[in-house]
Image 1 (cartoon, rainbow, N blue to C red):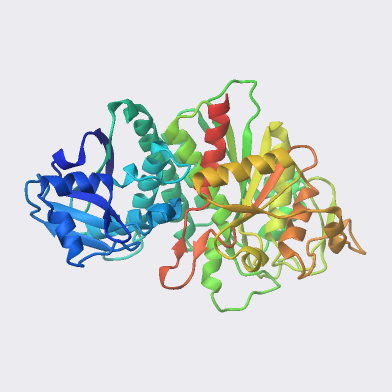
Image 2: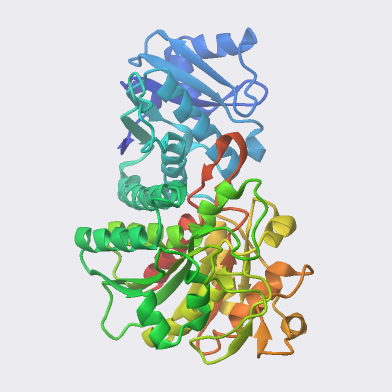
Length: 498
């Protein structure tokens, strides 16, 4: 779908469908009032008859409204005017797009971006509207023999703005929102693919395809044999149980100054996680194809950054492996030597994400990074702590943690910070190695981050546990594309500061 902006007054527009807001207690928004006056009170008359109250999410599709040039007008309930928030704006935006797509509207014009949302300017309202629209229209049907096709799909959405002076920032919002949406789309596609298709070699091929598509983009792939020779014993301990060879994939987007330190994003890419010898229960094990959600989000970020053509240096690094039980798989109790030289007692082979990440976090020291952020579907414990609303954030650097929290508020892709105090490290003690890979049930998300922190002492680092936010279960099972908006905002904020 294509997105546009246009300046003008709502009552003068010619479009397939004009989208107008109505607040609770049947209060027309300012744009709806203009149309109501032109139509000799047609809209207010409908509201007085009780056809619509303006409750959040209510919709009413009108045809042949007098004196207008619109084929249809869609009234959208926005709830109480004082409580109209970013979340509510996103909800009604998604509802609108779904209705327009179902009813065969091919082009529409939205006035919802003119509504007041606390602390949000026009840029954000247009960006959030586009991201919501693309999220609603996303379909994963690549593997179905019969594709689902709309009768007359929505092809064009125009955002109506008051002043021509706002056109430049609106155009920027469209470009950046579309880039981030494309990144989210790639993240969803990769995460939704099953493990028999999306394995480490497949991910390496997708990285090489990005390098062919974009300028300033290059890829380096390290295979399992190279990593074994290099001494990445933790990574190899996970990968060796599978016939699919593990790989570390470095995607380098270098459009900034040559002496500029890169922002490095490291993604956990367990393309399928059986738990290894510490086998998972069978129920919902199919969802373990989503255990490469961190890697998928790094791919999405790299695509978004390249699409926006940002003048910055960014490295996306993916540790990709499959965790399988086999005769040569790692056993509980085995001790391995990591790339850093530290030794780890593996108490549970299902705590494998931290093992592939720790060697990746050591490897990326070579970039002399400005910051390093790893993204991983690391612990079920984070779902117990935070549910499916926020990703867990842990960091060894307060300014970096604050930077991420600020970006999460801006992008409305939320995080919540948890501590990694020294006391938690005691849970990782081992009688047979420098430390173990498991800290027990208490504070499981925190002790996992404590483990990773042992490999990040040479740079500013943060860890995002996205096990609760990377995908949905149930009837709407599928990847969410998070935290691509957050990661993209972190990079955008860096660019805007320079």
